[in-house]
Length: 429
Image (cartoon, rainbow, N blue to C red; front, side, top):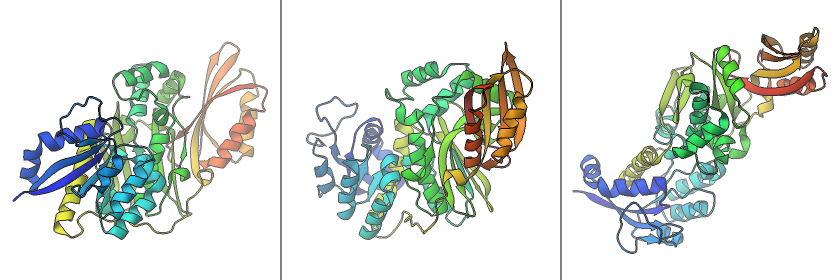
């Protein structure tokens, strides 16, 4: 016999609207597979009068979001409204009332994860967020459950579809950054205000969650260094290709002897690495460990349908646990660990300089790298009139040493511009 579960939604935008249509339009299919019947009983929105692309009964849409989490007919709360406030406090209210919560809010989880997870544990209910990192890619459950016994060394991720689409357009079509961004906005891959995506902030929140789950040490959003893609230009794309690389915005999460680190920045990824072939708005997460060697999870990382699929999977798990009265979904726990500052992590760099084309310039530049403790692995020069574009790829050295070397170059009169600095996914880092 089917068991009916009351659902309350916070937010009914792209993901929330898609989820409602799935819960209503595919109810028979879901019931046939799971034995569960879901009834959408309350939906909290900012404007209840706005036209929607789904239909629900009278009184279900409400601007009183607090009433969604306190309604006794709501068994499970789904938060897809985004932002820190009021989403965080609404989730806490639901959890403390003993209601399972499903969220797709990576910003909130990266900022207040321990508090929310602790509240869920105290209430004995699940707090699930599979959709918060990879959209439709199942990655939270594999990290927290399937790979819980693996000592993961590294997680590399292309976790922002907007930036990957832009960089793919620049690489594949020769588009400039502005044109590629405009096309991403036209297709709906980028928001009207794309700042969170192109600055790296969105990927940084996801990196915090990935690192926390992979290493069992909580890494908050403030612990993640990030850079965006706004300074990448066509010359960088062309030079990278000439060296056998593709430029990607990569979330890098490392376990070292000293502790764990997470950061997000553009990287030159070797063409033979699995992440180099991830094109368009696709996301991918690459996991390395001693027993598993390497695993790649790839698929659509954004959009209503993929993300709603991940949310719906969490809803089903939470419903099963609610009805069974026993734990079904994994509980996440974090131990003590040290966060290693990015400056103490080894990196390799690609550096593009505009210099005078005259004898002795390269020697002066190499000397400054040497003084900083950085060794040069590769040099390439392209002459332009009386100046030259000088490309340098370094061996692995501490991030702080690489930065010291770059800063010192600005004091050389023959160096007119440090045009670009991009880190490299290389053999030593």
